[in-house]
Image 1 (cartoon, rainbow, N blue to C red):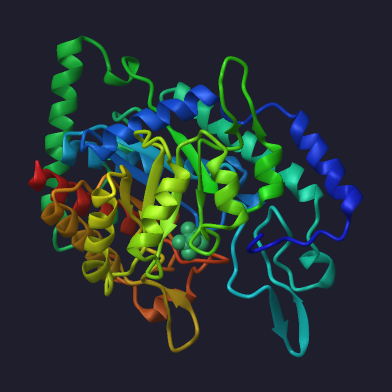
Image 2 (cartoon, helix red, strand yellow):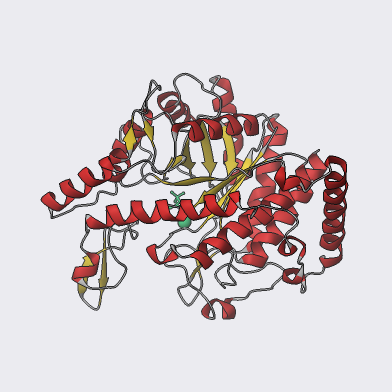
Length: 433
Ligand code: PEP
Ligand code: CO
């Protein structure tokens, strides 16, 4: 297995996996099938996908204010995108189980001491001590439990009308106070408010009473011990489903055609994602799509493309053509985060808002030129006021990065940057009709 986790406690591992296998699923197969249907619609341009959340969700994030803030920003972005595109948005969080991380190095050395790398809370702890860095199988059960608690709270919030577009926060524009375009954002919000009022009046009651807000979760299916233990054959279904999440994805580092991850993902019926980075060639992509989606099932395979703003225009057209030439469907979405990471002179990992937007723009252009559909976007973001990504109308500079950099792994858009991004994409979707 690539990115293997070596547990030295075989008995503890077996016990943890046995416990997991007995626990009820976090999601159900019919929910995953529903998401697959919505993704199929997105691939035809009938919906738009917003996938977003932390790079690395931590166990301490399983608390109400943190979950609340993440859900809020995703719902607000989706309200703006729905309005801009005139299409329903498929909302997918990187949440309720995004606890395992691939790392470029298996170990980390500080002051002559070498310990295993931090691999996400599902595996070990971030403190630099031998005890914290030892992979601990008990964390598999704790992660599963926290994921279930997180999704349970999200389900409760949504059932209680949390997705209601009448909430005052939806109409709050204080985040844009420094933007030269605040007046345009205000005008768009005013139009949205008028439309909501009109529809409320037309149907005779608040809109949210009519439709439940769908929300799906996803995570990188990295730890195959964990994913396998959550995989079952639900009654009345033919196949196997990984019911730890709706949509697991295979990361850029583990998508080898003959690797363990592709073998596992081939065997489950969920909608699945695959990260597509600059190393992916057209033949490899076709082979991967053939292996993972032999039946060309609509909505089954989402390609989460993360080529970087500098490479997307040159590389994406070839990939789109190759798949089309092979008669293979896919849901193409753009992850404009992971190909645009760099380190500042002080060694801080960051990304620039302009590069992120540039990659989204170029992806739209490539798909439009190819007669194909950019079905959605994938962001690392948080509902909090962090300082991890440069730029945006809040004008974050390298000096600001020291102020409130909370991420342990990759830099995320903050609240203002995420909402601004949603407005900018809504505007582009609106233009495309
Ligand atoms: C991620 O999405 O956090 C990640 C590790 O991405 P990738 O596999 O594309 O590098
Ligand atoms: Co990341």
